Image 1 (cartoon, rainbow, N blue to C red):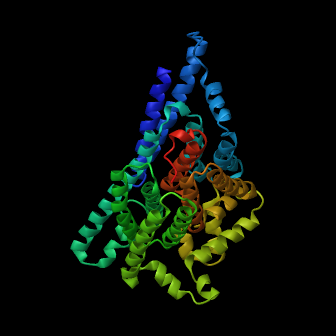
Image 2: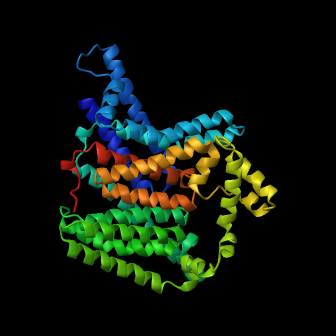
Image 3: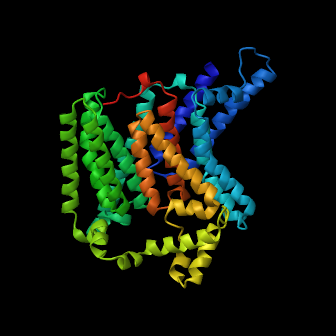
Length: 430
């Protein structure tokens, strides 16, 4: 048991470092994932060694031990749904011509396999309420440091050219594309709002959350991701509905939520119109013809045509980029070809890569997440699913290391909380 405790401690520390660095430097994620996987393998083969060579009767072979954890906590279906997509991409290599890109794509998606396997086979007796809270706290801290640096970065740019655009969109986002950064900050916002409404969180934790939430709201608006505006709206609606259906401190919690909503609306209203990309796009659309002029519509239409031509199994893991470039050439879209645009829609990306089996498996996983979050009353899991599902409509989030690791970690971690951690150890519900 002592050796397993050591492995769990290593696993927890590396996981904590990964969530802390998610919003900061994505270059740290691959080595940390490698270390996390190596620790799991050492534990597995260490138990095998003890059983086969040291003949210790009390030692249990890790594979049956971990499989028992998986089976006992009813996580086999979850493992199949969440890790199955990686296996389909691996199979997709068999009918890919561009093996170089295919291998790179598979390596970048390793977290889809590793995180569910590592976390779902984790020993639930080692987890407690405090450890869970610190995972979320470190993610929020990493996001806060990222925001502080982006503000500092924009201020330095502004000192040089005195242009207000330095505080908006890509010039403001120092670490990630604005869409990815907004996704991180929106989820961090949701965690803090949940803390604020939670009865058993301490007063100082509520005060810190209340102070930080407006800062995170401001940052999301400065990043000016159009999808993030929609995500924040639906998350706000979800939280208000959540407060209404719960009896404890309903009026107080609703008042707090409305105050934060007013802050959001005020920030939105006082943003300079020429930097408000959501409002500019909204005002530009007067008919469907205006929608068709958008770059994303052209990308989606081209991707959909390519996907239909390669049903039912897709083009394979390695050939997506080549097929899309060929389609852009056919349609006389040299700029799109030069930029090598992906589908800018993860659902289309999966359909094009691994066909109908892939999209059915992935969408089934999202619906399963919805079912689990409702059945287990794990509200943060529901919010996370909403944030992911909407963001995947406008970006191929699982095609970048930061996006796929964010999804893999928190999807598996929130599922772990819902299934494995006893309800007595969970952060209390409002």
